[in-house]
View (cartoon, rainbow, N blue to C red):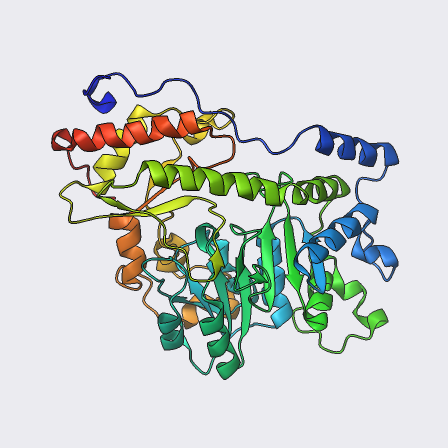
Length: 435
């Protein structure tokens, strides 16, 4: 193999595309045909009626998800985003309230409180698990704090006992964004039930998917009822249902279709097997990378089952080689995945830009008028707010998706060869401009 790096004009380690990660097939197709043949693609009614809770297949989906983790309630939504917004509304957050959030996740994990005029307050993350740090959360609690949105980032369950202790002490609700961690658990408790409300994602890029969709789980009867009303024009049923607390009870249309529901139910039946395959790829990759000095493999919290939405490693910033330069060179050696060609090589320096550096936060521009929760924040949305998040993003985190079930060992071997080739030629790398 040539030692000249592809980024410098040498041959790539691999040109052939990596195999597409496809989880849907004949079984899903048959179920979708069943729905189409029924003639009813959605069966919600925004009125006091049994179909206020959705049609046959939506309720079948919800029952399957609830049973799978022994939850009292599961509610199907059109997205994880909608589920998080409904969770905030059900809890009753509003102007003057604060919700503690992470800066290192998809933006909705921090933006959901803004839909009700509440103020997101950012806490920093643990440097090795990347979940919210209980000490930083505790420091962010004020007499206005009403809830915590916590993310099982990259598939790692958050520190449930520590965060629960804080929530109980201060009478706070915990909303667990487990979009990246279906099938995980901590000390025997499944993700989704580590907080008061858990929200899963069925977006295309997740472990399993329905194209789009979300599942919200809870053991709280009142929260379940309120989220069901927020999902489907709840103002139309509050009188008939005798609902006294009308706070935030202006319902949306956040409903899952019958087609998405049957796909989600079928995909759920595949989840355990897909996770087993993913963990096999993780173990093989880590074994092949044993002794690769500049990278530390992901830490798994004691008692946790990590399900690896992505494989997030730490780069040794003292190794003498710039992380960004290394990542750019490795990406040049490898192909993209089939069906995801436009997304580029699935290797990244960092993850997402810290949420508080988005213009929405920097300019404090959310909802107009007194409901703009950002105008009430005591935090300065600027560099320096969450030092650990910033170090991870700009310096030390390296994440990739070369552990999906479609990757055979020979595919992973090519990835390992690319890492080794670039490391051996690291003296020839140039440091790119800072992000």
